[in-house]
Length: 192
Image (cartoon, rainbow, N blue to C red; front, side, top):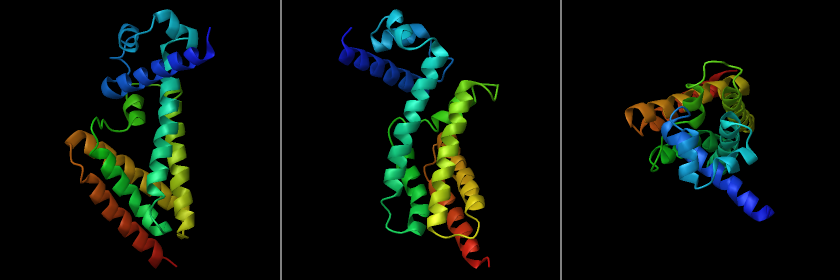
């Protein structure tokens, strides 16, 4: 087997899986659809992934890496720590306006699993933990009084804005979340 073709095939399978589960969910993404859309055999899929669950987990882990890189790169373009904290919501608004926006893949797929120990839920939790850690770093950089508390509040604002934008189609949910974040930052500055 040619290692280059092997990598390409695996990437194709992961790309197609990610797109299908993001668009339609895990339950609606059957193996037949994956085979047909990816243009590979079922045997090829099982060569790289033990089962559908392993494939879904790998696709979500890959999305996590790519999304976090995109998000942090965009947020970090703001010149100061305080501006980066608020830029979070400008970046989200851009995402909300993008073609194919379907909300948070990790919230969406978590909603399809009932067991908190399910590997899909564990990937989603790891993603939210990474996002929380990043927000915590931004809060530390801005020297807020309680960076962990503010980071947790910002995570709730982020996930709330994502959900409202998805459900209602209202991209300005990011603006309202940014207004709330601004108020939280003002309170932090007033707290001794």
